[in-house]
Length: 495
Image 1 (spheres, rainbow, N blue to C red):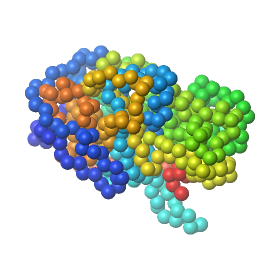
Image 2 (image 1 turned 60 degrees about the vertical axis):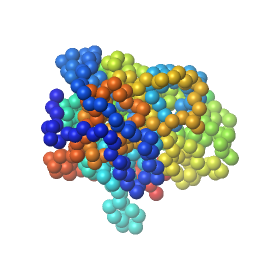
Image 3 (image 1 turned 30 degrees about the vertical axis):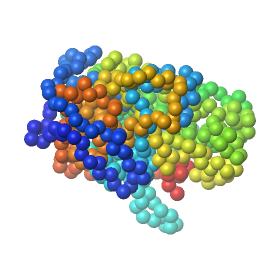
Image 4 (image 1 turned 135 degrees about the vertical axis):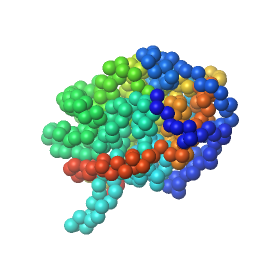
């Protein structure tokens, strides 16, 4: 395995101070970082299924990036036994709150998670950036792309160390980068839809648009998966959510139509990810992004928790859509379990959400003619903490048994912040942490036995002049942006 030269890599006996930028309303506490006092000796190798040819590498990581996962939704589902995979991971690993940040926009936070850096450093400050005024005086926007990111992300860093990394559906990855693995981008572009009804698509993959998948020869296979999902979307959603027992009102129909694109995106990326895992080929890190819980929360919180609103939906509409959020969480739990079955037995599993969610517009009367922002019944712009769960090789095991179905959320620990995820994963992968990163490894998450022989290493930066010079070639403007911008307006992210 290629390693950086010894003159560039340093062993630190204690943590560096955090350097958070002014964009944050929450600073990850010192208790969320490792106060490293680790004796450095000789590293002992770990063996794993299917990886005998690379016995010097540690077991792989399965990383599930779940947008908007909220502990207050998870807890009652755990109590009912509806999330068996997540419960099993919690029972044998580490879990708690994950501090979020402001601005609480998915594109910004997931880029901070991928880079370990504040937005001022990584360059993605919103979903879009303003480029001027239209003839009618309205603002014109363009989408950020992977080329706008000013620093390397986890997939670049692992690739630099000859580690195999697959990345499916991550924010701001179009055009797809040349990595040591497969990248299926979340393509920030839209096009005219084949079906007559109007819909809004998140991370749409498009036939005929180059650069959505790396390696390029795999793109046709992903497009076939996309077409299959489009053809079977009604059956996919019925399998997850069932069929509404009552006629839909105009408002509830609008809510469903404005959420369907997220379920479609999830199904596409899940199938593309499964297609990669089913090859059985070794990997070092596999990451997949799932966005449905966030979008379902925005749209259907009022149906799931009607008592929180002065004007709840009618009873028949609650019966139609009151379980949409729960059903999607159950679906995510099932997908995590299926992917774990396809991965080596000793894999490290990490689940993280960029933020939690809570109700808004509690006093409003909801009408289908309202401004899109006013029809949301949940949001996260005040950065409620998200979910973090980790278990498997390299993760600490619980010292005491706490019944998972009896969690006390007000007293649950905060295990770290969103920018601490990448440094933690780099330690698990035995890769130096960049000194220019703003996160640090999480206290209480890493099994110290894993690193007692290597310690935690640092390097000034992972950003090479060659990479920085080449990123501008990847800056591409999105195609046919009207509906994509409308989608962001409907979620309340832009006006």
